[in-house]
Structure formats: C-alpha cells, structure tokens
Image (cartoon, rainbow, N blue to C red):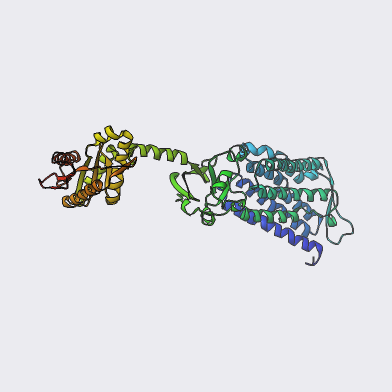
Length: 531
C-alpha cells in the first residue's frame, strides 16, 4: 500500500488521533486528583486509543481474517466510550452518585454484552449476519449485514450520547458564561463522533469508511485546547446555580496550583480584574492587574485553612474584609483546591470601632477618658522602667469652674472645657497622653520628660490658658488653671501613688492663689497669679 493513496492518508490521521488519545490519557493520569471525573476521562481516552489504533490496523489488513481479528480488538474499546462520556458529563454537572464503579457498573452491561457478541459472532451471527469484503476495491475493505444486537448496541450508544447532550444543555441554561466554553467543548466532543457514526450507518462516507476515528482526532484536539485555555476538568461546578451566585460574599475557587477555577458575581464586583478570561489564571497574576487591588493582597498557605482581616481603601472609601481560605475536599477526603471567601465586615468593624471609641474617648472633649488614660499610663510606666527613661505626670484643674457654670450656664462651661483641651493639644508634644481625669480636671503623661521639663511644659500651658480668654456672646471670659507635677522615680511606686503626689501638688497650687504650678517634691512655686 503506497503512502499517497486515500487509504494511507486516512490511516495516518487515524494514528494521529490514537496518539492524541494516549497523550490525553497520560495528562489525565498525572492530574487525576484535580477532578472527581478524571478517572472516567482516563478510561475514555484509553478506550478511544484502543479503538483508533485497532481501526488503523483494520484498514491496513490484507485479508478478511485479519479484519475480523482487528474488529474484535476495536470492540474492546468502542462500546465503552459512550457510557464513559455520559459518566464524565454527570461528574461535570455535579451528579456524583455514580462516582464509583460499584454504582456505575450498570452503564457497562450492554457494552460488555456487545463485546461478547462480537467475539463470538461466528457461533450465533446476532451482531453481524454477514461480514464480507467489498467487491472491485483494490484495498480490502469490509462491509457488514447488521444483526439483532447490532441495533441494540447502536441504540444504546446513541442514547448515551443524547443523554450527555441533554445534561449539558440543561446545565447551559443554569450556568453563567464562565463555564459555557467548557460546555461547548464537551458538547462538540460528543456530537461530532455521533454525527460521523450516523453518516457511516447511512452510507454517506467516502469509500464506506468509518469517519469516527478521524473525528476523534478533532475532539481530542478540542479537549487539549480547552484543558490549557479554560482549565477543563479541574474543579467541577457542583451546585453552583443553587448557592454560588446568590451569595453576598465574594467567593473564589482555586485549584492546587492557585489557578482560578470559578468565582461569583460578588467577587467580580470587588475585584475589577476578575473576568471570564481569568479562569485558569493564577490568582497572584489577577491581583497584579486589578485596579486598586495592591493593598488587597494576602498570604496564601498551601496546607492550612486560615483567616485574616484587611483594610481596603478604594476611591477615598475605606472598607474592611475578612478573608477566609478553606480547603476544597472531594468526597473521598482528598484536597481538590481551595475556596477563598471575602466577607464584607465594614459595618461590623465600624460599629466595633465606634464602641471602642466610646470606651476610650470622653464624649465631650474627645480626649481619653479616665479609665483608658490610666490603662495607657500604666503601659508607659512599665516601658519607662524597662528602658530607664524619665516619665512625668501633670494634673491640671480649671480655677473657679463652678462660678463659670453658675454665671454663664452649663453650655458655656462645656465650651470652657473644650477651650482648655484645644489649647493643651496645641502645646503638648505628640507622644503625650492627654485625658479627662474628672469633671474639670485633666491628666497628662509625658514620656521622656524629666520633672524640670514637665514643669516648663506646665508653665507654658498655664500661661497660654491665662492669656487666651474664652469668647462667649461677645464677652471675654478669663480662665485660669492650677497645676501639679510629679515624676516617676522608682519602679515600685504605682501609678495611683504618682497621681496622688501630683494631686497634692495641685492642691498647693490652689491654696497658693491658683493659676500656679507646683512640683510634688519641692516647695518652689512658679506662678503668675491672676486672682
């Protein structure tokens, strides 16, 4: 047989189809853990390879006896391909109850009987009534007279194919565009061989040859393209239409290589770079392309479930998200990938921040309240002892505050408190701790300040308060304050004792005429009294 004859060229294409089936089987075997239906796909490609290679040898045969032998080999693979395709589609659309051989064996009963009928046909002729060579053909080519079981086999094969297409069509209606390329690939892979078999039965093929092996070359090419372009057969879209798109939280599905296998509409709203083209791409590549997603990256642990919270600033708006990464397990417990859920906790976080603010901040003056001031001051005291750095404290009290309330009203009294806070905030260093200690009394912690430096700061505060009256209803109200200053000297003196020392010094300032600064460990007074 020369290589330039149509039969020789046909044999070449059939062999290429068989090689592609073998390569697909090898790929599927190396990636069998990624998809629950991958084992079915392996068997489908192996059976396709057996069928196509045997068909090539049939075409190259020189006698009817050789053709009979290779026909028997063909039926080791061909009857089992269509039920394997049906099982593959069932896995793909999420029908998992036939995911073990114990439950799926029933699909292979008729194919097994077909194989038995073909191999024993000479004894009963139920599959082929007759098998003979075409007359007046240079190359031996076989023709058949179908028997009873031939039609049963054909009906079962066609029924399996139509059932596969029906499942894909039903899922097409429910799914989004993300999976439709994969569905089209599977549908073409099923339809082309079915149409080829129909044309062969109707006698519409050139030289009466079976075109199915050639068409399998095309379908194998489609599968290869889809595997690498849309990551076909990695993570099945199980029950996606029921829960996935209805979730308010953004969800990403990744395979073991951190490639994006699926995402819902909420995720695409959060990450503008997420489009149907993102399917099959690595997650980190999508982050890099996404606008405003630079601050939204997070660590990916390949083995452990983990959770973290992120602050995300977009367009001047601040949002908070809880990112939860979880293993995606198959029914047998093996890891198929991961799901990443992005939960919007902005409202919850803002409420927490508000509650924390209320617990820490004085509602009138918006500086620390007494409880939080004490808590933070203890931390400063511990740090000062460890680092052997100075730490000083100031207590200040507004002079004659009750008279302000009685003469001008409590609203003016509130303004007076805010007025004092504003002046102090302008003068105090950034590392100072400033809190409302009582009604009209304030406390200040001054890290890295000695007693003398704290005295100078208190004196500056005293002068600024006295020199800046409060204006209310076109009236200038002169306000003064008295101060007590102390310094932490040894580690065994508690905070309460230090503030008590400052309070005693403050008491001296009050009794010396007010508008004065006194130190806790000396009698010197720096005052510019204004009575």
